[in-house]
Image (cartoon, rainbow, N blue to C red):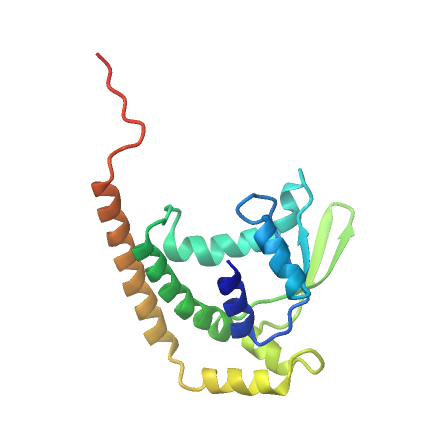
Length: 185
């Protein structure tokens, strides 16, 4: 976990103030908490019983994670290796080529809700436009990373790796006997 978190922070080039997680034990553990203390990061969690605290993150999970690799449980070393390769490429597509709109304001008049959004921009464009938070070295690194990228080629690589992941998953499941096989006589 610590190596994955360090790698993620290093890739972004944006200073982190903290980590916000879901309430599950797969997210909240002493190892992560101690690591956050060592790295001087705040560690917060969603409020227990409030399902919609992580709605934005959950929406991104569906949009990016689930649409890319589906709903299967991937738990073999081979699947992990393929997932890491997929996410390395998907990160480039999402951050450099997928424009997003940010909600600026929301007003309610009676039963009607009016939402105003800013102009669509990719996360890469937003980082370059940032004046105060992101260091110039991070912007330079991202610009160098962006120049040679070909979104169509990256998408084809993601699709090929995803097909390989699905094949690997199906083969692994075919070799594993059912855990709770029942026999009725």
